[in-house]
Image (cartoon, rainbow, N blue to C red; front, side):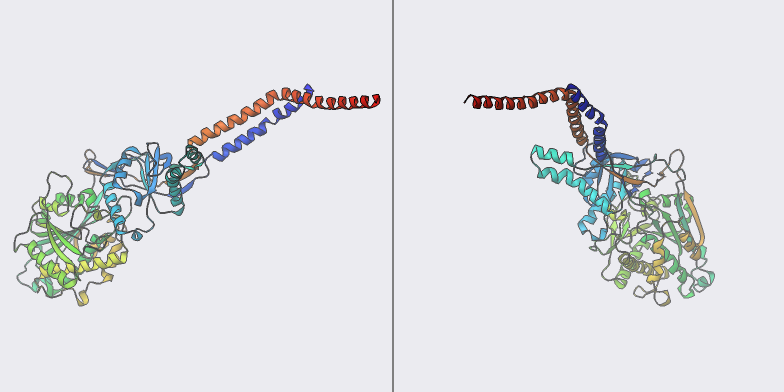
Length: 561
């Protein structure tokens, strides 16, 4: 009997590897599945005057948590941009391990308040350094489901199961996600540079001879018009460049006027266009002034274009603001142009108003509010035309935009107002008359080609336009000093976001306990099976013997009778 029990136990011992296969299968179930891959864009990173802006890390390999459940630097927060607040961002950039924000599918579908909150958040992100890696992901339905799963697991489910057992079951059975973004080290771009292009519009001698009082065109007073090309925002993409489009339109239209004998100007027009602008503290105009300071010795005024059209307007404000560092004196050039601008707005727009805004230059602040302050510091009469009243408006740095047809319509209207005001001032024509009409009329086809301009270095579009209409066109570059750089850009690497679905750490503990109990049960069954078999065998042998003895007694009783 013992031999039979031992033989039977050997079956279990020989079958133990099959038991391990079951264990391995359970381990395979809880292992990470194939990752889901998503496109991501790194947050912009740059330096200005020794200050760091943007993030300074790139690689992420952490557990994904929602905006409501993270609590350590071992967590990477995955959430929607629309759910983030400035308070959340301030906390995350110091304490979280990483941040991935999914962009809205269509920002125009959001209500006005949400759009305003997004632009304010953008501004906060662009004006603060973030030691943690930050990425933006275009809207994706699958990524949206992952965000919902993370948020549901960590908030709703726990709230719905108030008992300890219920919360334990939710915690053990819930899905977790692991985020991986591979990124190399953040390296300063030693080839960083800001291109600046400038040229001038000098009327030909035939046009000047028609008006004897004008004299030599080289001696005419100068009007300088400047603008900046926005080449990035919170991430590396091109925002709306309406300012550059207006400047290029003015170049084209006034080049036609300057060669018309009946419209001989009393001023030379110079144009200056540089990359980036506000985010680099107007580094382009600073460099140009340092290199070509004598160009403005005979300047009448400097006109700067800044956010001439609100790229993400709510449609509540319909005004054009003239920003100055000090109120202009009566009958000065800036005062006369302001009157001309108001008159032009009344004739060429439907309800757009022109207002003056005075703000002193804060010399204690290294960051300038407006570009004209660069020229005002050097005592050149200057001002900025803008659609925003406050220099702190987040619209100036937003990368999001309205429908382009609305932006084009508003920009075209503003262009006509500025062009007419400038023509009335330069040609001394009757303020109530219209200069740009007939063959000189400003139309959509004049403005539209310039809306696609992205950078001075991109496809030579800007250079070609300058050289087509202007004289003495030059491109200069502002490069950071190797020892004490005023600005610096950083190399961007193309990376992918990989999201793995995994079980939480407590599930591993739970699974370990279950497997341990299972293996212990198998071990005890194998060890004590012979004894168990012996006891069972005894019981099975005693019962038939008892039954047999019972039948014999009955037979004896029957015989005795």
